Image (cartoon, rainbow, N blue to C red):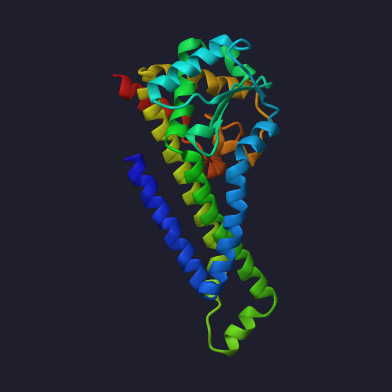
Amino acid sequence: MNTVKTAFLMCLLTILVVIAGSVLGGRQGLYIAFIFALLMNVGSYWFSDKIVLKMYKAQEVTRSQAPALYEVVESLTQSAGLPMPKVYIIPQNSPNAFATGRSPKHAAVAVTSGILQILDRNELAGVLAHELAHVKHRDILISTIVAIMAGVITMLASMARWAALFGGFGNDRREGGNFIPYLVMMILAPIAALLIQMAISRSREYLADKDGSKISGHPLWLANALRKLQQGTRMSPMEANPATAHMFIVNPLRGGGIQSLFSTHPPLNERIARLEKMAY
């Protein structure tokens, strides 16, 4: 169901890109924006693992340096039928984890030192299985494609603002045109793109919870871990870049109310409830 929802949302985002391009001025503006966004995002996709790991000062560890962590990852990758990823520890007290890499052959999993302190072996396996599910589903690729389309829409909206500043609206009036589509492009299109992007991210989280539980064989391992992570991130918040918040297993950023609408993560209570339903 989450896979179908993701496909539907990506189609919706594609339609939004086409509409935005036609409103602004046809194919030429759309092509320019698409190529520019494509170059930026492909570069980010290709080097994202190195950038993010360096950003959080992640340190690669071997079997001899972190035997318990390494053995858990190794066991889970065998269950999932994946190549062994590189394993990193982030020197932060806030409990969290993420996976990165452009493909299963170039994957890495990273955990904070804080998560190793509060989770037992089974709970840690639940978290790492979730992250390996992201690797197996190639969610980094999916998020990159979505980012490209959302970036195109944002750039088209910016082009519409420049058109307005330099007389685009005035020309439309003289020619009997309607400037309302420009206003819609400038205001509503970027918001719609962001909401769709966030919805896709949340769908991928639910899917990783489900398939990660299949990899570990125990949905309650992840459910119990999420409870501890919910409390742990409140007590020890993480200094995270908002651009990378979607990568973590739980949202490292604080937020509530209207901000939850733009959250890349589903509510933790809902995730836990779904995992418990799977178990029972």
